[in-house]
Image (cartoon, rainbow, N blue to C red):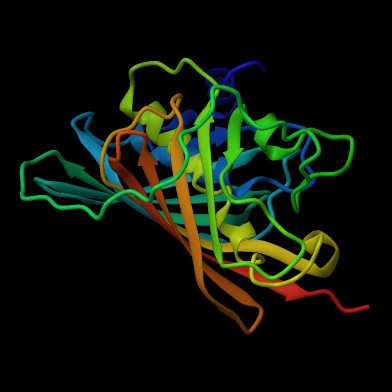
Length: 279
């Protein structure tokens, strides 16, 4: 695959009945990338709501590690349809067991007062992405594509990970390899997938481990996204993440996705497992 649109063509859930869908995963992966399942649940739920509605918030739990070689079944529960808001609950299952659960709230566009904090001051993105070929995550093996390359996402680090204690703040520019169609739902799916990068890794910044993969069992436990403004995810967006606290084998991270013109596109939050491996 050479662009993010082809990724979506591969993973978009196929409708089998009014409220059920099936989906496939990209290979090779050692463990299913959570960002893919979040995006798939959003895309499945989108097919069950009025076209005039847009997702404004998503709250999810990762229940079991997913198997990328196994088909995913999606069940959509139409909890509520109101005049301004609708809610959907989506459960993703493999072999009859739930691996992921999310609630998505939709809102019909309306006018209102607005305010926003300023975007962080960082260097503008360069024209070329970083070479991420040597980057390894918790779900990839040496010799296989990493999750950035596999899902046709580009990244430029603003904050470099150090093998020493550093502030719990991580900033990177991201974009989906495009061009993407002028479809808000497609750009939201790309945003949701990008939102699952960086949050987990930021919890390790204050801890002096050269290679956290060797020392920690790590996984996303839950994930939340609030959509504030439509954005073009085939253009560079800044993902500004921080970790206010870690303890008890868990780390809490927050994130903010900004367009280059300073528009806050979305806010995120995630709690992660960061359990120290025992010999």
